[in-house]
Every structure is written in C-alpha cells, then in structure tokens.
Length: 319
Length: 208
Image 1: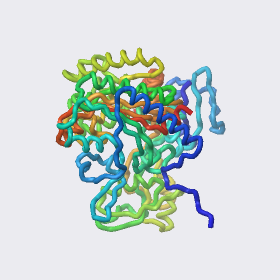
Image 2: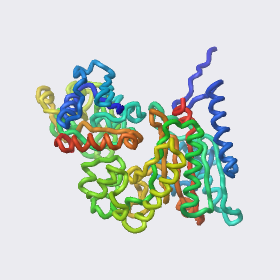
Image 3: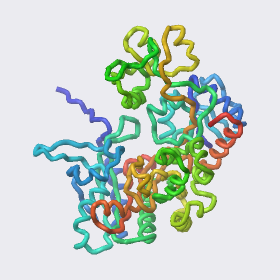
Image 4: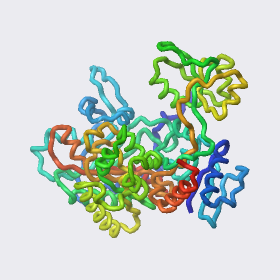
C-alpha cells in the first residue's frame, strides 16, 4: 500500500537543507540570547484553558485549538508563550530573584483561515525581562529584538514603534458614537472616517504622530517624547533598520477601560509596543512590548517586557 | 519603485479615471489590461494587473505595495490591509435579491445564494431568520430565478438585470466602493509618496 505524504493544512515538515537552515538560524539567535544573560525555559505544548479564559479576546479565542481531555478537563494547545510563562511565574514571583531574564523557543499552534503564508504551526523564539521597570527595560528588550532580527538575516528590516493607550485620549475626546470603531478606522487609516474625528487624529493617520506631542495630552505627550529619544538612539545603533514611530498602527492597543474589548491581537501590552517586517515582501516577523498588566490580571505585580520572533518568517525574508 | 496592483474587470475604469483626475501618471499603461506587469520607470511605478479576488493577497504579502480593490472582495478575504480612501466612481450596492419584495419572516430558514459567503454569514447572524448559505461563482441572480435559493446576496449596479429578470432588490446591506488598499509595511516605507497620492486623489474630489 502506498501512503500519502500529505499533511494537514497549515503545518509543514522540514527535511534536509531546510531543517539545517532553521537549526542554524535558531542556534545563532539562541547564542545571542545566552550572551545577553538570558536563560532558557521549556514550556509544555498543552495546558488547561481555564487560566487564560479572562485574557482571551474574540480574535485570540478563535485561534485556539481547544479540546476536552479524557478526564473531562478543557485543554488548549499552546498559542502564545507569554501568557503561559506569566501564569506559571505569577504565583512564584515572591520566591524568585528579580530581574529575571528568560528566553524560550518552540512551536505555537493557532487556527488560521487557509491562505498563503498563514501557517497554523510556527516556530517562535522570544525573550522576557521581568522585574525591571521603566525605559531601561524597554530599551534593553527592543535593542535585543533588533539584534536578533538583524542576526536572523532579516534583510530590509522595518520596525514600527508605539505605545499602548497613546491615542486613547484623542479617541474618547472625538465624541464618536463608537470609539472602538473609530480606533479600528485609525488603525486602517480610513481617512473619511477619521477626518470627522478631528485634525489631530488625521495627522496621526498621515504621519504616525501628531504635529506636536502635546496634542496627545499629559502623560502620553511625555511618553511620545521619550519614544522619539529611544528611536533616535537605536536608529544610530542599527543604521540598516528602518525605525519609525506610528501611533496609528497601535490605535487598538488601548488602556482606558472605556476602550476595552478592542480587537487588538495581543491585548496585554500596556507600555512600549513594536512590531517588525522584513524582506522585500515585508513579512511580519515579530514584535513585543511591555505587558505589566498581564501579570496584574494574574494577581502579581511585576514589571515585564518581552518579544517574540517567527523563525520561519525571518528565514523566508532572508532567502 | 512602488508596485501598484490594478484590478481587472469592473473596477479598472474607475481606478484609471481616479488616478488620471489626480494627475498620477499612468500614461504609459496599456488600458486593455492584457499586460500583466508594466514598468513605468519615469513615474517610478510598476503596475501589476491582477484579478480582484487575488489582489488583497498580493498586497498583504507586500508583492504589491498598494492596489485598488472592491470593498465587496475585501469583506471576504480581508488581509491586514490599510484602507485610506474609497473611490467615488463605480459605486454599487450589496443587496438581498429575491422574487418578491419581502425578506423571510422571523424564525424561518431559507437558502441564500452568494459569491460572498463570509459577508452573508455575518449579515444573516444579526437577522431574526436563518439561512443555509450556498456559495456560487457567478450569475447569482439565476439562483432565485431557477429556485435554487429563495434569496441571493449580490452586487447591484443599476438594477437593470434584476428588472429584466423580474427580480427585486429587497434590501441594501452595504455600499460597495473600489478602495485604495496599502500594505502596512509599505506604508512605512513609501509614506511620503502614498500621502501625496492620497492628497491628490482627495483634492481631485474622486475619493471619500
């Protein structure tokens, strides 16, 4: 009998040269993480669904592979490392010495509609820095991300920077009937819809930032000034990377409770947030940010920042 | 060089007219749509000629930086694209079509034929009636005529085809417009040029 070599949708087997290429890239990145003082955590591929229930959005819930185990427990396949690591560490934080520098590597499984370039199983490498507050941690994490993404062979790397809640004040002040819809329109740069909400948001849609940081209001204005400084510093250090600040890109990363329930795909970010594209086809290769509120939701108070990179995408971009 | 994807079919004329009105030079372009790939080196533009349904995929993957595609198609195959403006010319409606001018009564279950199953599912989910959604690839209006389905969800432009076939446009579900779509990463890279194009399209009054 001949057996078929076909695999389920969205997964792939790497053989020979393609396996070697991925392992080489993986070792290169892991080497950098170890050199930067990060130690490895190995996490299970299966976990209970229950600890994550309150963290899920409609979008992330739809991606989960869930099933009932033989003993009746509801389980889910790992779709994201960060919440899993957070839920394992949150109850143990008091006995751990901070700051903690951790990295992980492995597969995540997410249901995606069948389309070119949308794998359901993909290999991530990521790092988390716990217990270090403020800009120092954000700078360390972003710098490490840039180092890894460039070392991973990401040609023509573009990194977009912003921070969660940057536009909350403007979105709420616009007096829109549905501020979440307005946030989505800003993120999609729908000018017709945004124009009705005022000139500052329109400037953000056009240029990524308002004409003057003050237009964001108090704390957000200070954060934007800080981000400009960080961008300038890292742009000088990584001249091959196009680093831009674009607050519209993160219009759905909100902090104000009145804007809760937006469709942000990783809704736990609450400070710096960034994502990267690589290669001539501009594939999304990874991202990260600060996510203190993820731990808070799990009952622990600790500053946390981190990132993840998709190894397949990085390799594809460097091919 | 920026790569612009233009659709074959009904949105091509609207797209070309809008770019012409905005003074965005596509003069060297063969309007027949037979050429699949045209370089316009003086303008710094490469034009790709793609099928409507494939276009969002090319833009999502950054193979084209931007393109023009109908909002009907975007609603079905939405990648993570930016949609800065919608063209005014060539607008149409996405409507429920049937043999009689009434929607199904609350609690009833009907069959609905469409090219847009995802959109149909979203719309029907908010109704008091249910529908088995049948995906067809063309001539959707035939389905209610030949009684394959009680209802159809399809594009209506003038309504002439419907009238000729004794069909009724029962309810408009959405306005359909050709949209400028932009790849997220390309927008960072070509922001000045794209903002210039968008500004010129707005100034020419051909978009909203």
